[in-house]
Image (cartoon, rainbow, N blue to C red; front, side, top):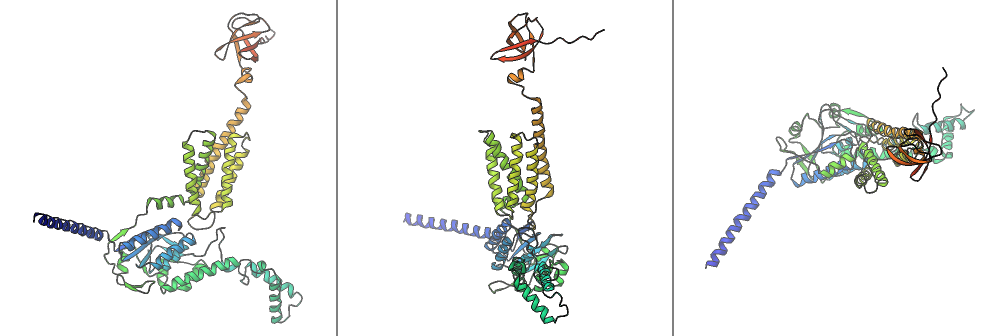
Length: 497
């Protein structure tokens, strides 16, 4: 009987205990649930930006958010990262509103695609968007203006020259004959000459179809979206709303949530969701330390510094075995640089020139070139840095100030080392037999043949072929083990009176 009562009491205590835990968990979940979840997209859009958006959106979905807000200010970025973000938006079971803000923000290039892909496109009154023309990694803008047949294009000029040659002397020929001659001339030319920018037109056409699809998905102005790609068109925030490119103007997040309250949006799965966001609780996504680190090292200026520190650290370790710390720091920096360069648009010829420049500047310290290697290294480093990161991709340009500062600092150190090496060369040896000949000895006692002298604050056994007086200055002529051979210094000539 007592055991039964004890068992029943234990069950009651366990029920109360686990019930309390369940209630606390429910309250905790409710306290962390967010009505609006804000994720920031700042700077160039790259692998780090895409990972932040992906992680943030998944957390917002797990938190049962009613609306995901992408607060964006970007000059553009990589096409692959932009498409990853767009795919996350399109597949999201929670409505996504992209707000170009705060004041002065922009949604240029890749940012325009993200804005048009969102269920709600909002902009700060002082923001702008557009200029969505693709740029290749070589840094040149890809436009369909280079297509044959367009006035002013290379292809058009070649076709026109072919036509003029074909109809030379027959200016009065019929239009049909001229057209036939033009077609024949174009067919006779090699494919690369007939269409010198085929790849560029493919990229443009792909981008146009992509951005039109995104705009039409939410009944926005697809014609202007095409102009943003083909002509690099831009719009202010007010113009964007007037031309049905953006949906609302909002000066703050609270104003945005109030403005879209009651609006209906259609998700990718076909569900229609009515937003109830007035007075919604706002939560902000905080990137992890790994994502923050990736954002930092993805900056081209930081990547160049990591390469320099890494190479110099390994060089120092190689010439000073056992130092350990420089080698460890150098290896870590090189690995971080390799990871950063993997996720950035980089011209690897330029990267090779950077490494060559570092090697030449380092070799200046060990090879007496008197500045030739150092100067060549500085030039290679500057040209390589410009080539490596001058890809034309918005948000991934290297700071000219940073580049100039690094080059000036390394150049000063290199040239200073060369100047010091030149002085040492002129000065000559200061140790050994050659160095000893440059010093004078002083006789300690009178001696004829052998005796002792003071030389460089030390007492030396000396041999002289002539008698020597105490205190007499002596010239060192030869070093034989621990014996110095000396001869009296010539007396200064007295001038005649």
